[in-house]
Image 1 (cartoon, helix red, strand yellow):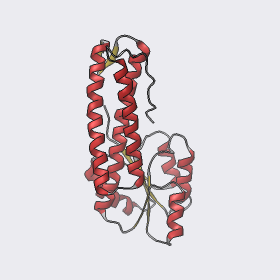
Image 2 (cartoon, rainbow, N blue to C red; image 1 turned 120 degrees about the vertical axis):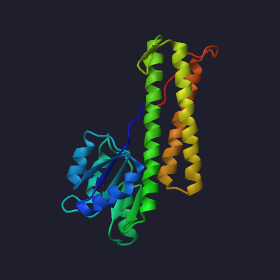
Image 3 (cartoon, one colour; image 1 turned 90 degrees about the vertical axis):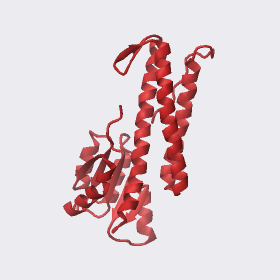
Image 4 (cartoon, helix red, strand yellow; image 1 turned 30 degrees about the vertical axis):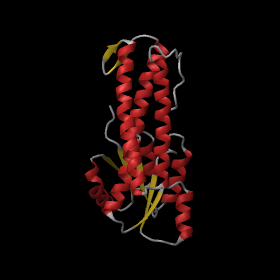
Length: 228
């Protein structure tokens, strides 16, 4: 079962971290503080995060350098980064943020509702990807085991496991479709739309692999889509 998503908040000023926590508390996710780039990189060694809110101007390792380190690591390079900055040096400064790997760039003071809405999109996409990985893991057990498998703490026969997988996948497909429609309606960030499309392609591949295992289809072992 998918747990709460973790959101990494990186800012050297405690008052800014408090403000971010107040804005994002309504999302009911796990908020993790980091007061420096070094502290953020340390947190990323052990935990998985749905999105990172990263202050640009910090003493020592600034936001750009921190982002560069994050994008160089295989474990963390796909985590969305939203840059937060108190100043605006014009298009060159903004371009540097996107070049460093940011999916969005927001100047302070920002609209709390807008920031919360942007973060919620990436949290939802993260949740859907986690669910997809869970379905892929169960299906892989069926493909590799060729017999009974454990799902939900119970030993299930192949037919029962396939039925449960199909039902779970249908629920994820429905949620992903609703999210895609929401992104279209809200003219969301291009990065969020692209991530949602990537998720839908993975769901389609998983559905095809599952359908190939259904009795009477004549399908043999199917290759699983990568959940990443």
